[in-house]
Length: 105
Image (cartoon, rainbow, N blue to C red; front, side):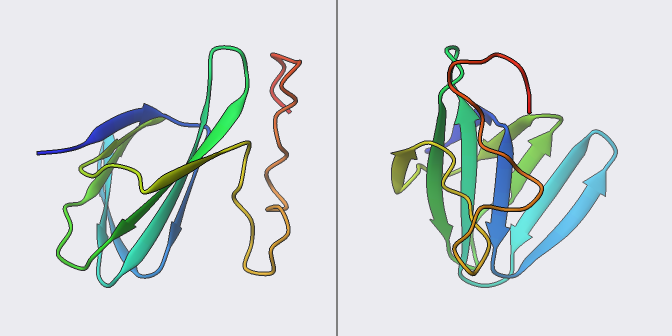
């Protein structure tokens, strides 16, 4: 079994998912071909975005606080926060982290 556990800053689920809240654990189960983008911040404060794709029969993605459990390997990664809204602009509630600052925006 392949999988990754990532402490994340932001996760963006695209496509159709069902959500189950089991107290401390929230699970997301794909109901069709879906995508997942996860932004992780390194110890130096530099964000990296990891991209995943799943089929309908994929295992659920589990979230516990700021840790996400993914039973898959990422398909690609890019430096910085690459999560955008459908028009291609950055999400309005998320400001990219300044790599020179430890302060949360």
